[in-house]
Amino acid sequence: MAYQFKNSKGKTYFLHSRNVELKGGRTQTLYFFAKEPGQGALDDIPSGYQVAESKNGLPVLKKKG
Image 1 (tube, rainbow, N blue to C red):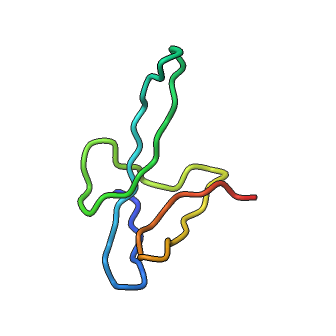
Image 2 (image 1 turned 90 degrees about the horizontal axis):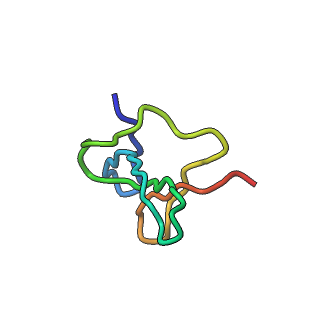
């Protein structure tokens, strides 16, 4: 089951990841939240990250620090 986050407004978002290739040839993993679970949905938060909520209620993944 995909990781879910319910924001302060009561809306549920699902965590996803996608690997993209940068111009220099390096591969980077992008993490994002979507309203529906889909391809690339993750079951848990990656280690070293935490979920925070932006001012407008959208969830974001931030590095612990």
